Image 1 (cartoon, rainbow, N blue to C red):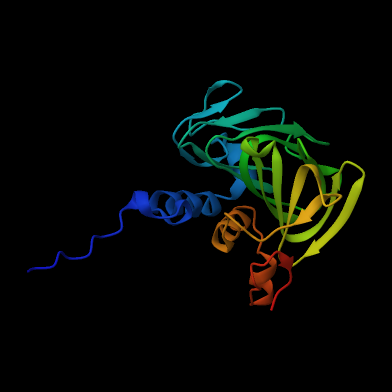
Image 2 (spheres, one colour):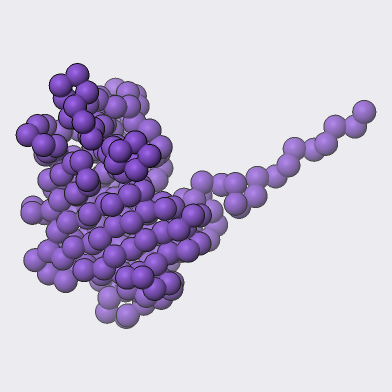
Length: 238
């Protein structure tokens, strides 16, 4: 019996950051000068857009600008990558965020995640926060991935991919310093007396974070060190 040849991997089956269109868009974004050039040339700051995405309740178009003060929402199958100032954000499907204004129009002071999942790389700076229904994270220059899960009582998954972050849930405070994926759950109700519990690194990859870092002229901590760690959530390189 003749065997069928292996089926080629189509673009739809590739991870989003490996698709030809995404790679071309990212290369063009970098070559044209990043956020500053996009602002000056009024080209928009959306690097990748797929499916249904709303900006302040209206369909987002590729040439538009997402800026502080805006609300962004993705539908089923929706996905968007955009850059504001020195920070890059990737929203997955069924996600709702508010991007709150900082000291300037192009500085994000608070990323408020209502539901869904967001990966982000943040430039250096103080007075920046990520807020979810069960967690507040004070951040500086860092990479983060987080999810809010309504099916689990708005439980939050939070990964400090690298950098220094102060986590607050209720009266609990934890200072997280990581070079490779230190991860936590922020519980809606105490688990063994704790609201912040350990987690493993889940649902995001090194390559995704490297992609976002490149958009804002950064490198991840493991790229700088030339080595990676284990994805056990401990936060350390090998």
